Figure 1: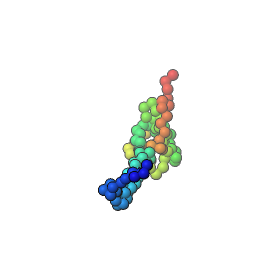
Figure 2 (figure 1 turned 90 degrees about the horizontal axis):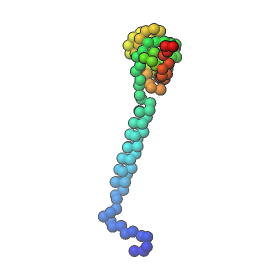
Figure 3 (figure 1 turned 60 degrees about the horizontal axis):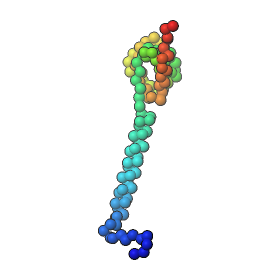
Figure 4 (figure 1 turned 135 degrees about the horizontal axis):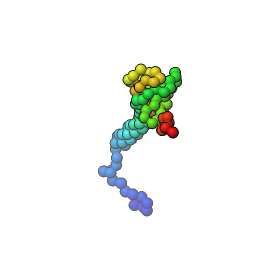
Length: 110
C-alpha cells in the first residue's frame, strides 16, 4: 500500500442498488419537505367575526373588537355566517394572505 491509499475489502463495497435506493429516499424526503413548507406558507386560512364597516366588490372591512380587518374578496373568500351587508355581524373565512389586520384602528374615545 502506498501513502494516501486506503485498502477496501470486498465486504465493505456498497451495491449499486443500495445507492439508488438511498438517492430515491433522499429525493422523496426533499419533496415532502418542500410540500409541507408550501402548505404552511400558502394554505393557512383565517376566520374573522365582526361588524361589517365597509363593503365593495373587491374588499370587506370588519370591525372585530378594537381591530379592523381588511379582507380581499375573491373565489377563496366565504361568508360562513350572517348576511353580508354594512352594519351586520358576519363571520368571514379566507386565506391568510387576503386578510390584513389593522391593530387598534377602531373608533377611539377621546
